[in-house]
Length: 80
Image 1 (cartoon, rainbow, N blue to C red):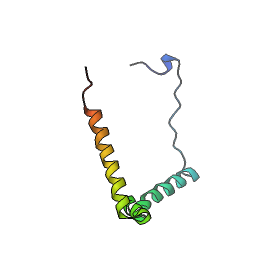
Image 2: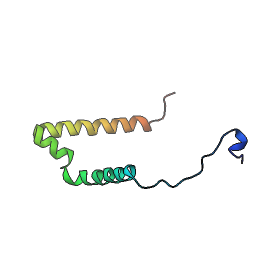
Image 3: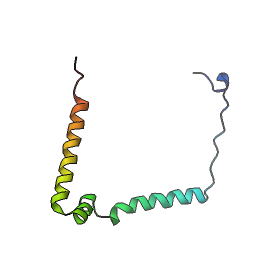
Image 4: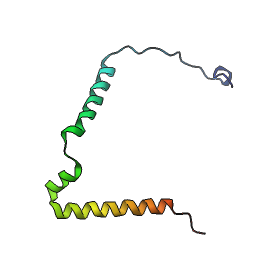
């Protein structure tokens, strides 16, 4: 194996990053992301409330068919 110095690169020493605003903000965002799922109803329920049951079933059915078609075309061997 070749050292980084042998390749003309310098390596920065590993330093401990003191906790500060960045760390606190990252932890706050992670906590917020974890709580978002608990606070919002599933997308299908929100769609049903906004569009009604019939249109929601139509849209979700079309999306599911599209997903299956895409998955099939990716798994199919190339022609030729």
